[in-house]
Amino acid sequence: MNKVNLREIDRVEITVLVDNYTDLLLLQGTAVLGGFHLTGPAFDPIKPTIEGMKKIGPDYIAPTHCTGWKAINEFAREMPDPFLLNCVGTTYVFESA
Image 1 (cartoon, helix red, strand yellow):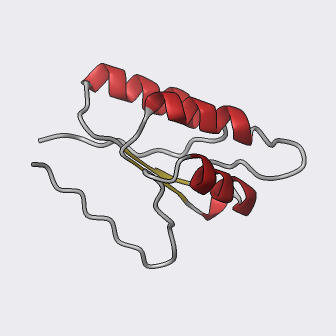
Image 2 (image 1 turned 30 degrees about the vertical axis):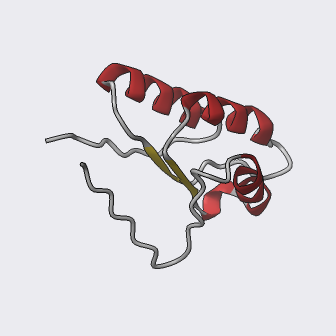
């Protein structure tokens, strides 16, 4: 059985966490869901976070409301294939082959 660890993280740490998690477990297939905290006047690292996520290459990415509207739209534009629009009540089901 595969374990998935969920914890609160913020800002560009998301790319570091996912990159390390993928490398350590040699995962086949990755989904990154959550609020990436890429909003506000004091901190706006949208571009480096998206570039880091592109290097990781997740199969799915679903940024939630805490990511910020501007960043969510940039993820949709920059990563259209893995992008999933997250809304209230959305359910994700990932099945292994």
